[in-house]
Length: 239
Ligand SMILES: [Fe+2]
Ligand SMILES: [Fe+2]
Image (tube, rainbow, N blue to C red; front, side, top):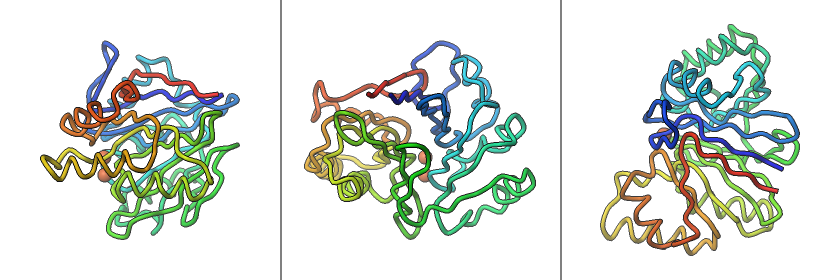
């Protein structure tokens, strides 16, 4: 069983959670814990983890989707409470992010570069790095209903990432969760993107963060009851 809990997001669903332009989610499987991104600000990450009763010192794995501040901003404060995690990052290694590189090095953190798809934790995989200008990797695992995909910003396009997971797993993606990066897309261009996402055959969507209100509304209209509200404080469980 895998549990996903939103910790930092543009869309908070629980009282006392601080809203952030950023993304961070906890994934738990068989007592092992993975933190997917860290939001833009360590104090928000620490506050929200406390509100949600998440012990950040118990995180085993840090997954960094890409090197944008709204995903890496909490790393420094995370490392103050956790010196034993292992980090999985996209390539090129720590792309233009000297500060993040030195924070990880100074703390002696083991860093694994995910150029190709690889298993990160029992049954959890990196898609491998996609995109050239903004290198990003995403995470997926296989539930009873099919692959579940988690994305940070989905800069290489959410529909391409969904297709990559279908290729890698040989199965139709059941659900995509996280930032879909549609906030700047409107009108006909937005409709085209939503149609392309729908055409991948993904069964359910839980878009948050940089999907934006416009993107979330358009996806809600298209997917109907297969649209899932996701954000900080929301917990989803998959068998
Ligand atoms: Fe983002
Ligand atoms: Fe981003």
